[in-house]
Length: 291
Ligand SMILES: NC(=O)c1ccc[n+]([C@@H]2O[C@H](COP(=O)([O-])OP(=O)(O)OC[C@H]3O[C@@H](n4cnc5c(N)ncnc54)[C@H](OP(=O)(O)O)[C@@H]3O)[C@@H](O)[C@H]2O)c1
Image 1 (cartoon, rainbow, N blue to C red):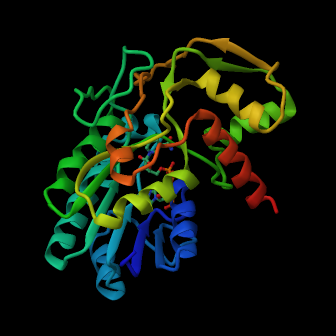
Image 2 (cartoon, helix red, strand yellow):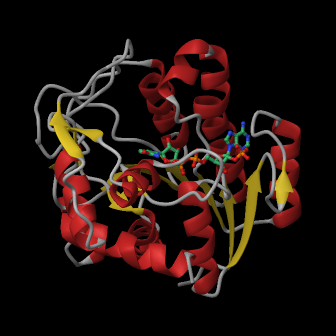
Image 3 (cartoon, rainbow, N blue to C red):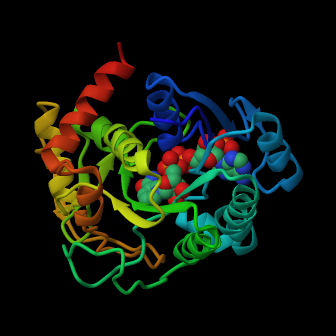
């Protein structure tokens, strides 16, 4: 790998923490940015601080993981959702173009509904059902305006060890306490753990590809099947789980989020992890984080 210095924007988040750890373990110099507890602490909407950070650090690669991921928050403050989820991609992309820096924008899979467990290609038609999807989608052309840039569509799972539980932290706590939970049979994703994601992204960018790539599990599973597989990997009972249908609680949610992984598999030369491999990898990460 020829890269030396990375900036990870959103380095204290679920994905950012693992990306920073993984890239550092590969011998790279990695600088993190967030609003607190990072190497640089500022709001990504502050252009001056953002560009100053780039000027000082002179990175070879910038990875932007920052987003407001809470659907309700995006609906409530659409302006803020644009300022955080969309606009920075354009600012960063332009800076990277002028300064010969490779730019990676982490996008989403929140673009598909109504076709259950279909594996969606990078070229498939997308649907923008809510403000989160609209603002994340807008960041894609803003990024790709720079030909030396990459957009990754994904569905990530992992541990944040912070104030709010991630989906996996919530599911594991419920399995461990055996508190009854509803698990959705009609909500499909190809979720990949952030450790596997980081390894695959690192392999993918060896040749600095551009355009849009999906990085995901090679399996599409319902949330119910994902939690059942998690229970198996952690040797826990899932008898507390009630199979049910998704309750959209007033929010319009995309629910057929499967991603096709052929393109990335051709690029890296290996198969992406299946559901069991993803939940086994989550078990290893859990043990590592609780050592
Ligand atoms: N989680 C999922 O299920 C999922 C699925 C598909 C795609 N994605 C995408 O993957 C990426 C990473 O998601 P994640 O789950 O790791 O997110 P996350 O855990 O919420 O982390 C977000 C990171 O961004 C920082 N941040 C948020 N707002 C900021 C702001 N205004 N200025 C500066 N930093 C800010 C946060 O730290 P502070 O709050 O301390 O600033 C944190 O470091 C996102 O782009 C998301 O759209 C996520």
